[in-house]
Length: 163
Ligand code: MN
Image 1 (tube, protein in one colour):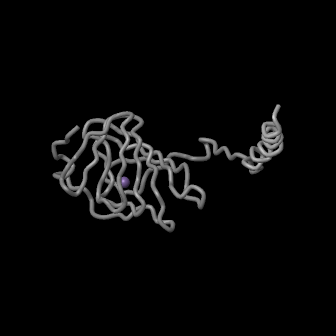
Image 2 (cartoon, rainbow, N blue to C red; image 1 turned 180 degrees about the vertical axis):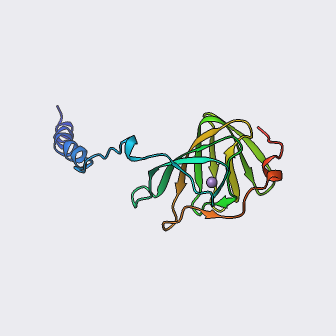
Image 3 (tube, helix red, strand yellow; image 1 turned 90 degrees about the vertical axis):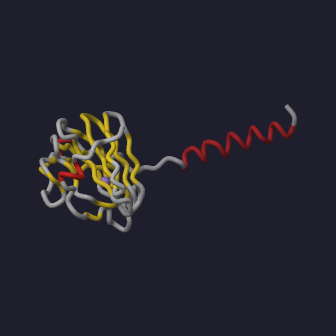
């Protein structure tokens, strides 16, 4: 073995394990059991119709977003609103709708993912005839995740959706 290769091997033996170990933290994992995250009726001030939600995660410094599981019964939807740091929706079940201020209404189906950029006015909810469940991952801007606006009128909600 040439000197250079021996040197590199020695370096790898000494340095690599130290680097690998330094990447490990001693902080314990946290498991939050489902029973400790009860599903509650959502406040009627922010929604139209019957909506239940399970708050799973509030924003922290390390992970500045909230995670909420939301179930909309048929016809139920949010008010118009914006998110200061944006929002991702992951549709888990049923069929839903989402609308934007340009008048466009889109169909949401199981497995669909929506990215709503910061400060874009929108709403989301169930279809008129099907319930819809989504995970909402909502960015936090200095603790603020949402700004609520007006209710979505029946006319706005009933608009013919696009896929
Ligand atoms: Mn939203």
